[in-house]
Every structure is written in C-alpha cells, then in structure tokens.
Image (cartoon, rainbow over all chains, first blue to last red; front, side):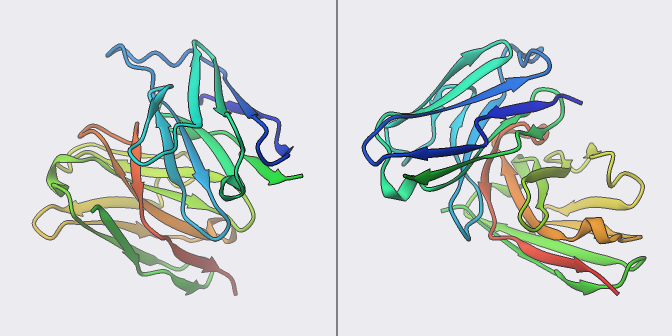
Length: 111
Length: 121
C-alpha cells in the first residue's frame, strides 16, 4: 500500500499569516494515464470532508484562491497564503493513483 | 447541485450485519464511480470500497475484504454497502463519495454527510 505521510500533524497559525502542509508518498504518484492523482481535503469541525485541490494543483470550484497546491513525484504541499478563521479544521492529502489512501491529517488551529 | 444521502447506520452487535445505502442526485449517476470512506471516532479517513460506473469492477480495502460487498443500482441512483461479520473496529462514520471519473476512487469530488455505524455489545 502507498503510505501518505503528512507534516506537521498540528499547525497553530496566526490569522492573516501563511500556512503550509507537506505530504509525502511512499511511491511516485504518476498514473499510467499520465495524471497524478493527489488531492487535498478540508474537514471543518462537525462536517464531512470537502475537496479543495485535485491533480496536485487544480483548485475546485468555489475554493478561495488563497489555497494552492504544488509538488511532484513523492513530495506535495498545500499552502494557504493568509489564514482566515474559517480555515480551522483538519486537512488531508489523498492519493488515488495506487488504489486510494489518505494522510493522517493535519489539524490547523488559530494561535 | 450534487447531493449524496447516506442511510442505514445504527447500533449493531459484533458479528452482525448492516446494509448502508447512498442515494445520489444532481449528476449523471451512471457515469461516475462511487466509493465508501469511513472515519472512526476522533480518527482520520480510511478508504473502504469503490465500484465502477457500470457496476463491473469492485475494489476493497484489505481490512474489509471478504466481509463487505459494494453494489449499485443505476436505475435508482443508489450505491449500497453490505457489511457482514462486523467488528468493533468497524465503528465509524461511513461517507459515500462520488468520483470524478467512471473508473474508481481516484478523485472523490463530492461527499455525503455520513452515517454512523456503532458495533458494540
């Protein structure tokens, strides 16, 4: 199984400051079809997950442009340019190239 | 808008069976793979199972293989998860998720609100 390792697991951030979450996969995530199936999800307290980013860097409709994704190979990053109060929650990376596995989650809180 | 509505959760004894159902609307159900993902209390997300758009082609996590069966009825826009031989470690909120493609759970772009399954004596 492909293991997804996120860091940090806890991320206290001051409002208006940037935040960055790293996700490392145990294998490369380029599918035989040429796509890299790496997504990022946000789960606010008491809510179901919501996809923010797919195929490494494509933002879903309605997602603020302060969220961005990048990376390649086995190293991927989710960045929030300026954290807002509504960004509090847990963030997960997910790979869909070799079956489907999730990272452990990163809990973002306001300092 | 895409809507996914899960049902069928509840309290069940170890060794028992439960059938979850997910009704999809707001999209062309028959052209999308569907998946189930679970989340144990206070824990992270775990992929459980996926089914291709036409129903031929099913996939399972090792933790549920041989005990869970996924199926779909494209005439009713539903996807089910039959769970047998339930264990305490199956206790979780079970989410139904729509895939962006027809193939499998590679891109889960919409999720339901979830249904809670509690396995306890």
